[in-house]
Amino acid sequence: MVNENKITAAFVQQFHDNYELASQQNESRLLKTVVNRGKIVGESFTINDMGQVEMAASGARFGDTNWTIPDAGTRSVLMNDFDLFIPIESRDIPKLKAHPNDKYIKLLYNAKNRKVDDIIYQAAIGSINRKSVADNGTATTTPTALPAGQIILSGFGTLKQKIIKAKSIFRKNEADEHNGEQLYILYTSDMLSSILGDTTLTSADFMAGKMLQDGGVGGKWMGFNWIPYEKLNQGAAAGELRTVAYCGSAIHFGEADITGFDITTRADKKNIKQVGGVHSLAAGRANEKKVVAIDFVV
Image 1 (cartoon, rainbow, N blue to C red):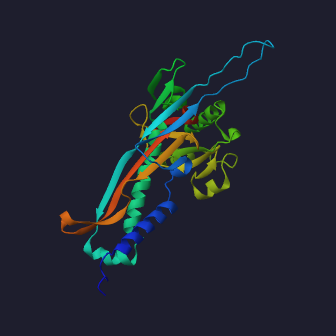
Image 2 (cartoon, rainbow, N blue to C red):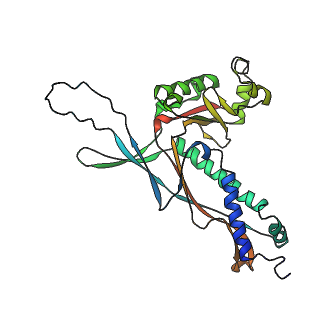
Image 3 (cartoon, rainbow, N blue to C red):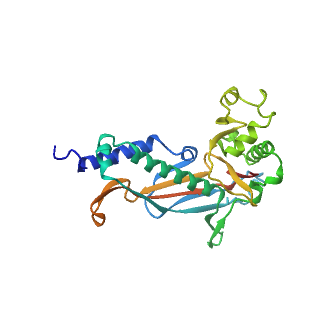
């Protein structure tokens, strides 16, 4: 057959469709836990926030109206471009045609998912530009970092005490399950070792049966959904790592396909085939009170 070992236009489309399907079925770990804004048009997207207001006594029957102006702001999240291109060996083309959802698609969506997770984590603990407008119409844009009160440093106590403290912070901020929120926490292998090595935590009174059987902390425990994630930043000091607990509405994520992941021919490289493409990805924090960073020693 003429096209037996050639990549046709129809196959290129099939590869693209298979990649899109695989990406939808293999969503990244952290993307499932945040607000997915979907496809973004433009170089950025915004997150609007508004502070809390309280009712007051009405006063005189025919008195003046007292206005309560909530603190409101607009957060700007700039899109960033990331690419990945992999050359295809000629001897792999027949295999690729036979199994278009094989190793190349897996390499591509696994790499993208890791990048998505990293972007979401960095957005949770990093700064975000917030624009606010004063009563006189003056607009001000300031980088907004995670406040010190939302960061539990390594010297606070044991990991168990830090988890309990984080849960209490969410309760104080009215940002827990009693206000319709899902809480998540990222854990590493070091955190797993610390938890499983604490007999008070692994006793039947503290631990769900599944956790005892599996030797893991996946699922919901102590009010948090536990998500495995190893790529943490350094904490406040050397020898420390910074994990994060957050509400499901705390982080917004968006993406845009610039070229998508496809098969192309490189005329400048002796017509070799390559798979890859460019994606634009970004995430931003919507509310500082819905995020708690936790430092721990490793």
